[in-house]
Amino acid sequence: MIEALGFEFFRSALVAGLLASVICGIIGSYVVVKHMISVAGGISHAAFGGIGLGYLIGIDPLVGAFWFTLGIASLIWVLVERAKEHIDTLIGAFWAGGMAFGILCLSLTPGYTPDLFSYLFGNILLVPPEHLTIIAVLGCLVFFLFLVLYPVMQAVAFDSEYAQISGLPTRWLHLLILILIAISVVVLIQVVGIILVIALLTLPAAIARPFSKTLKGMMILATCTSMVLTTTGIMLSWLYDVPSGSTIILLGVAFYLVVSFGRSILIRRNSISLNFT
View 1: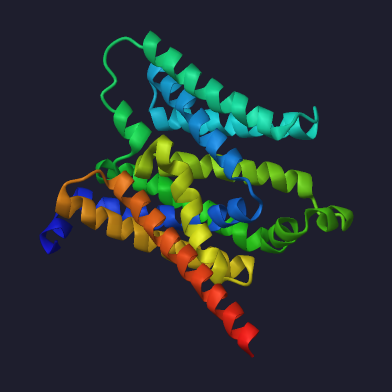
View 2: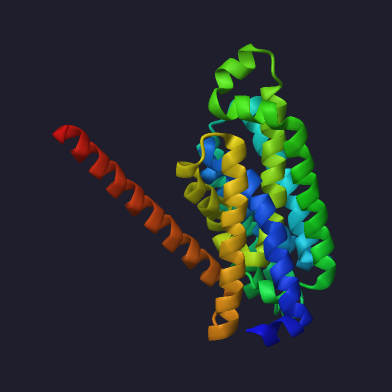
């Protein structure tokens, strides 16, 4: 295991996992608390359209995914806030439409697209060093916005109606959250791929939620949990020569099940002991 640290690609993978964990912890916690998992899933799958468009016009597919998902997130906000469209219907349309558009663009792209599998299922071991800078910048942006807007985010997360009555800019915060979800998706595509990105965005937050009394505590614990999952998953994928993305997600699922079953057993024991007293 120690000799793996001598390889630059392995060190880059560990750094990418740690940086992505910051984004997972902050944005994922808000997504879980606000029950926006389907929104995150729709945006993540719509990103495939941006990847296909990137191949078609000859730019970095992640750059194409970045601008495409920003456009989708903004369009969702406009249709929900202005046209009053039902968000579940929009998510279904963009989920399928983004994937279909990506497939169409890829079919029109001349030549062969060898990296397509890694965009679908991720391969953190192939993260180029230059992408670490992009992940770091986006991670710092998310962290900065969290520090500045935390009081508003907390108010909207737990009582959006009261926050709106109080005059807080809830509509613009909703747009900002959608944009941050889009940014998170693009960052995590390289880690676990489009298919599994929704799991990494929500599982650490779901694991942390029972142990946190505040949104801030949940974000911090979710970040630490995600760091453990990504680091352990990368190491196991190296040791056993298995896909890194799926290993990270399966670890997350295992952790979540252990926490859920452990919590239910503890609640049951407490209720039984109260009945006997």
